[in-house]
Length: 189
Ligand SMILES: O=CN(O)CCNC(=O)c1cccc(Cl)c1Cl
Ligand code: NI
Image 1 (cartoon, rainbow, N blue to C red):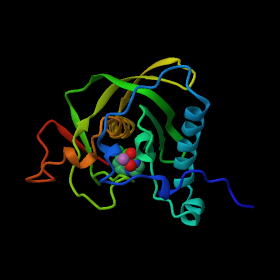
Image 2 (tube, rainbow, N blue to C red):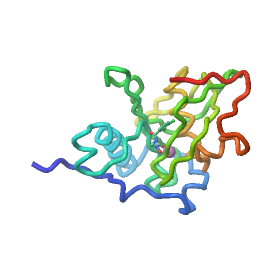
Image 3 (cartoon, rainbow, N blue to C red):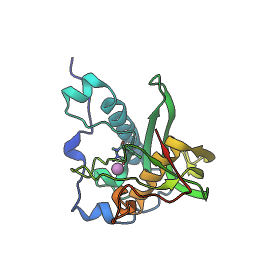
Image 4 (tube, rainbow, N blue to C red):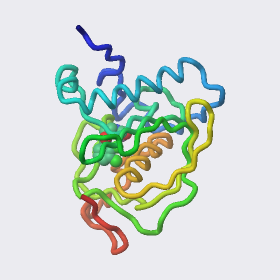
């Protein structure tokens, strides 16, 4: 029985598409049914991409986040699905109109660098990001949430919010020495 897979790699835009460098538009409430459906489809993509059988079957690159601009919808909405070490959801939300209210001076970068479904190439180097952030975001019903995040979930959310502002992960990599970070940056993982 064929699974219903609505978003595949074919729907994900790549470098060169101007939408990827645009500032996405704020979502107004109540959200349209189409916008709510897109949110569910984006989360479905993340779940499928993290399922080895489905990822192989539908040739999906694994992702822990997906921003609407990546499927060529320039609105401020992103799905985040960060698993813990037992593959249980550590942070699983659709963030609408996310804003970083505060951010730590302390920076963090993933030891293995970052990747992006919209970037069809490896770009080696540390991506310095805030180690802790306080996020304000809205859910699909328009309820406001304030969430404090640190480490991996914080890094993923910063990667996704960057997409809403036309920023790609390699924009943050030190051009001269990609593995150079200053002393207040901790390397994670
Ligand atoms: O915008 C989302 N993507 O491009 C999905 C593919 N990339 C990842 O899952 C990913 C990989 C490593 C570090 C971070 Cl922070 C992220 Cl987000
Ligand atoms: Ni990305």
